[in-house]
Image (tube, rainbow, N blue to C red; front, side):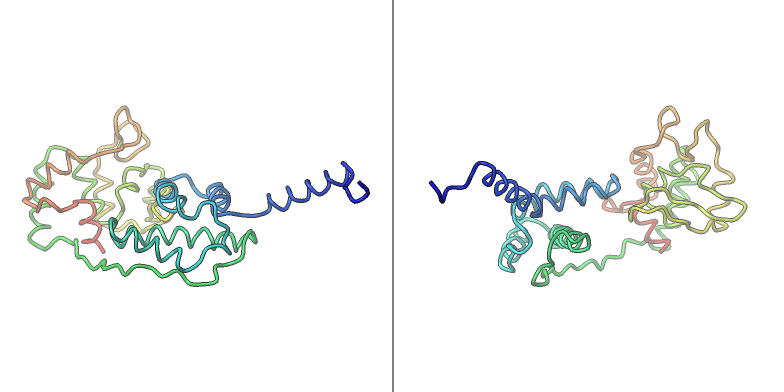
Length: 254
């Protein structure tokens, strides 16, 4: 009886254990903290899907010191059987990013090894040939959907992504200084690009609707799709079925 702890002593011990336990950061805990500091855009939604579907089942309950090279190797080899090397690389890159975030915020120690990434062959030229481009410009000129045509021309003359084109507002265009502000682009931070002569000509001649958006959708709200009209122009230009018009025009600009 003399060796037994008093209720007060036991409560102190339990409280100390509870505090120690709460300070242990698993990958799940790191993901929660990481999510709070991310911009809730399309990229975050993709990361959340990757985390919930691929990272969490294998590493969610683990602490960083409990992750070993063999654990990561098994996951990499498993997903390479059913997923592309690029997708598998995205999954492992997210795990690496979470650990690096934890290290930066002093929430966990770094991994004791480097994560081996799959080899990805991304060499693919999606740019349109000279003949394809001429055919497309002609198809745009004769098509009656001016918005779809100008969306495609602006992608060609600026290299803007689909999301940035749909987000574009008149207030983002500085005709005097010659710049376009991209709101919430793919990298996550607003950016500024030059307004060249070709893009200026398109925008200055573009019919302005009663909307803050340059290419508005229904009822003047933000556009979410233009696939049907763009595919109609693609077909008229005789482009291959696998061609992604806006993506190819962006690559052509580059």
